[in-house]
Amino acid sequence: MADFDSGHLFLTYLIPIKAGGPKDDVSYRQKVRIELARLPPAHQSPATQKTKYAAPFARNTRTHFARMFVLDDVVSNGRNRQDVLVATVRGVNTIDPEHVDRLNSAYLVFTADIDAVEEDGDPLPATLSPERQKRARLSYARLLWDTMGEEIEAIFGNCHGFESVTSAAEFGAYLERCHVETTMPYHDYYLELPKFNDLPLKLLIGVVAVPAAVAVLALVLALFGMGSLWGLSTLLIAVVGIVATVAAFIGAVRYANANGAKPLAPGRHDDLRTVLKALYTQQAFADFVADHQGESPERLHAAFGDFIARHAPGDVAQPTQRPGVISSAAPQPQARV
Image 1 (cartoon, rainbow, N blue to C red):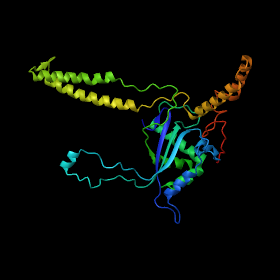
Image 2: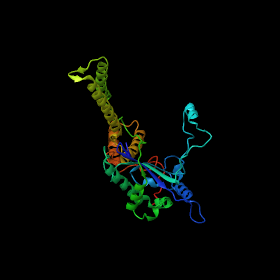
Image 3: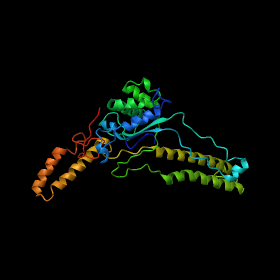
Image 4: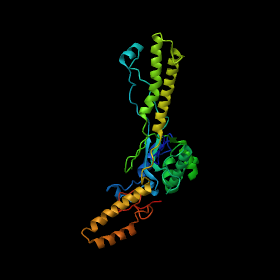
């Protein structure tokens, strides 16, 4: 699967950072790190709740997860493994260093897990064509520009090619040039396991095994002097069986790969707005239970009706928990815009 799974887009962008730095200043690489360090964190623990402002990614209701960091270079894992005897025969001198891959510059890595929609409130899709995936990515880029443009300019201003970016549309096009296909999702909200794309393994084995068995049988008969079978040359049947076996095997492998690439369907209540509403309702209902212990059925019924009216569990828009906070009862950060 590429980028898209379970109704979400799992995005990765590699943005090259400028070499060197401005005169009499730190390097562009270090300036990126400084700007990233200045970003306020999400209020997801008692320690982070002491910060005054909210995380900039919490200004939208589409980002489930986001991470930005500087990648200086790739890590060398040492020499490529090889058989000692083979290396000796080939005359490989293990003292001589092997080629080590290097990046041509440092990169700003930006990863995000987002709802695969073009407009907030749209239902999560079960399938998404490459063109619609691109439209969802561009929509998300515009959303980031509109909600955290100041931080984007401070961070990305140290990267190659960002000088010409002056609008949300240009920022989307800029990110598209840095987009790298993501092949592994990294979240799971499923309330129950989805129906996976199971392989019809017995059928695939049969499709490959039947022509293989015919080919082997015909070849054995030909070797024992039986020149024909069913009115056909046993040698010809063997050749046709081998060709059919190879074709069936290739087809089975391609089918298995295509089946594995199919995205899983969205989980129930899997979009961010619903997740936030669920967290809000869970907390409010826990308080309701604690506050109404031992009440009479009549008073409990009336109080529950008031609870439903005030908290509107069926409305994901209002009231709800804000993004980027651990609970609705925790100190709420200011929204610096």
